Length: 77
Image 1 (cartoon, rainbow, N blue to C red):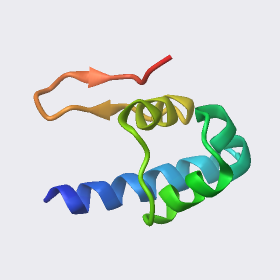
Image 2: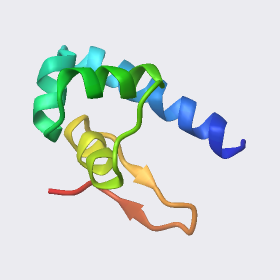
Image 3: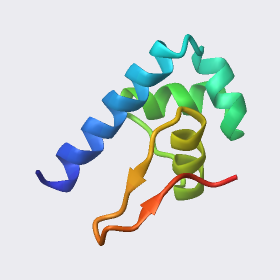
Image 4: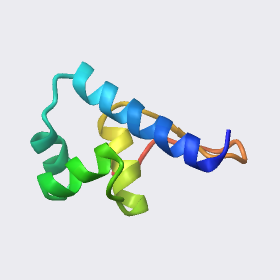
């Protein structure tokens, strides 16, 4: 897999997990401190989030981000 494929898979996983948890985009955006539009653009793949927000998002949804050198990051508080 290349980085673009990994990035798209990440977007899909975030979307699926958010829906599975019954969370709205508005609530999810609020949890990580961005506007609904920013979050919606991120989830659709047309916008980006800064690194700390990505880790906070993953943590909020119960998703672990695995760094390629084997270090596991649980998210940022």
